[in-house]
Length: 154
Image 1: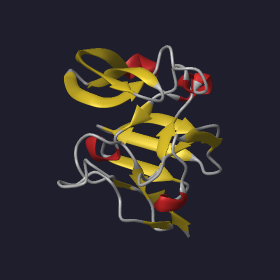
Image 2: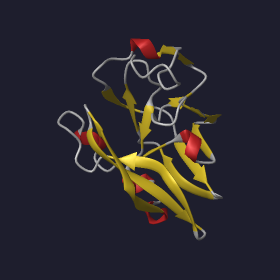
Image 3: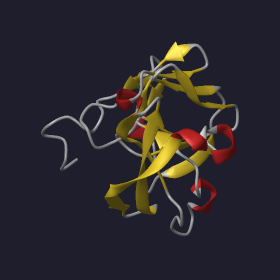
Image 4: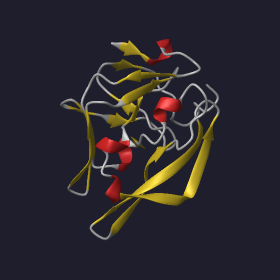
C-alpha cells in the first residue's frame, strides 16, 4: 500500500513500473512501458507518457486553457480529435518544464475521468476527485486525496 500523505512536497518524478494504457472513442491513445509518475503529498500519482508512446496524430492543442504549476511550470492542454469529434482537454503536457522536472518535457498526462478507460497493467484506474487534478487512483493507494470540495487549502 502507498499512502499519498507519505509522498514528498515538492513533488518528485519516478519511473512507472506498470504498463500504461489510455482508451477513448474506440482508439488506444497511449500504450507505454516507459511512463513516469509524479508523486506529491495528498495526491494520487499523476502519470506522464512519453510522446513516442502516444497517438499524437489524434491530439490537438486545446488553445483555450493553460495553467501554471508552482513546481513544474506552464502546462498546455490537449484535446483528442477522433472520428470527427473533439474531446476537450483530455490531457496536458509541459513543453518547457521548470528546472528539476525536465524529464517531463512533452510527455502527455491524461485525466482518467475524461477518457473512456485508463489502465495500469490490468487495473482500470479511477480519476482523482474533483475536476482540476489529474491523479490516477488505484487499489493500492491510501488517502484521503486532495481534489474534492473543501480540500483546496490542504
